[in-house]
Length: 430
Image (cartoon, rainbow, N blue to C red; front, side, top):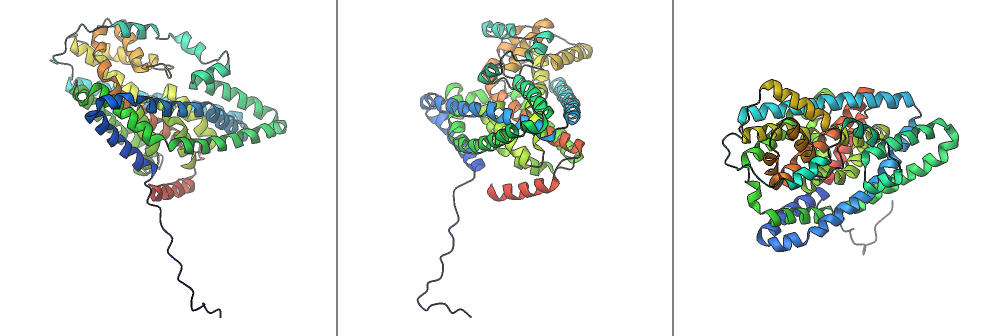
């Protein structure tokens, strides 16, 4: 038996790191940003470039990450029929979810009547709204927009839908040539791993970016923006909360995914989407999280980006609220049939506008004009659009994340063991 030397000192216990997790850091950045914007509004507005820099770092990740993960996912399976089946199932789920969101918003705005009797004058400047309305796309424009004339241009503009279409065709072609394409698949797989590591580095700047974004919003608009048109803001956030718990939670229960564990798993992309009001900012982290959560690479790489154009649950709920709200504000009585037709119009026109600045306002102004409702009514929403955009964008991201799990479970390829391992590790790291 080996005897310890008399002079030997007992080993010092390993010192545990006290550095808070990324989620905690983001929350700290959020509250610091609110304080900075409130107490030093000028300084809060002046540091907005820090938020812009963070968003630019995120956007520079998206194109190579999305291209590499989607192509590897398609070419790696080699099953083109499976990709068509996945696409069809995703579209079916998207349409069901967005329809529920639209009708839930319609029910809320008719029950609570937030625009009735609200003392807000009609007659605001509509110059910006008119410019937005001109950007509204017709059906053929949306169809043609699917196909890029240059994938380099699509990458430069950050057009996710065009990049998905190009990557899908590229992956199909790569799968079709079989073993000759294996070296390129290996290169792209390595590229995807590098981009995931790259994402981890960029996410270290998230607390600073979040702090600057919130400080600039509060500093520029003041805390009073949280009370302007408060009934509509509270109604939308209440509606989003119920939608998340009842609809997304119900879907999670149906596919046997614990909702609160799922919500905990996606907390980082959710918070990034909420604080920056940018779905793009949350995309890289959402791709990484859902793959680690048990969704196969080919499904998460295809369904999640596609959902950015076809599964905007938070945006569609907001549109149904805002359109009838404007009618109430203007004193225009709309029958249920008229509202139903307007909802169907919103359902169609909300597709394919991802990437358009203030996409929800683009759709809203076009729809108001079509139903002879005053654009001036939408103009008053411009002042609080940032606050409302935060909530609807966060729910968009949550809805798209659960859609990947829905399709994976539908395909019978969801990895429950991987989900349990990720949830356990994620809980320890929080």
